[in-house]
Image 1 (cartoon, rainbow, N blue to C red):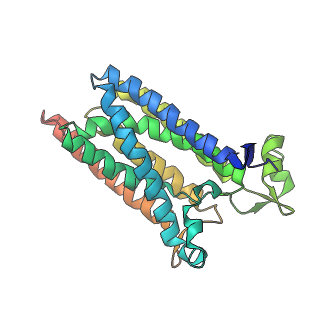
Image 2 (tube, rainbow, N blue to C red; image 1 turned 90 degrees about the horizontal axis):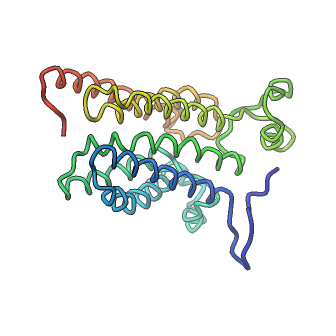
Length: 259
């Protein structure tokens, strides 16, 4: 097992989870700044936005997770603040970050669809990187698998997915690779998009499609009765993305732009 603590400075423990998440955020910001410059958007707006979006996304991700896992925290509510132990739900992060981004864009009279397009590739790449934090924490994995199945994976993944005498599906890896493929597609598709906002909608649809199937393999899903919350939300986002693409392409056909 990989030690989740990367190094220690006095009493302060620096964990791999935090390092990986910071790397995800910084990589996404760098790409968004480059994309903003290419689209004649003041990069300072991106920097100002992320100072709001990142904390809003972290708060939203943690609040969403704690809400659905409240029985695990009700007797120790302070643990709800310990995000370095894991437990950030991406859908909650998307909701919190989106609300903060829309508020900033409206206040400064910026195009919400354009900013969404600029940020979408950064978000999905950040998600691809961030899943390795789950790997370090041995969380977000799937059900038990045989040693023969795990023989197809690199040794360091096999070791980390061997938990209490049993191998488990490395679903973190499946989602990371899917997210990387979506990032590659969005980067390729950007100059071919038919309307402003299409890249962001494709991100929502493609990410959600992969998440729906991968979620079915996981053992730690947030549940709403018998329903996996992430699968339900993924279906809703796929429908929203398809409807938005249909509407946007029809608008583009009439020569009208989205704002």
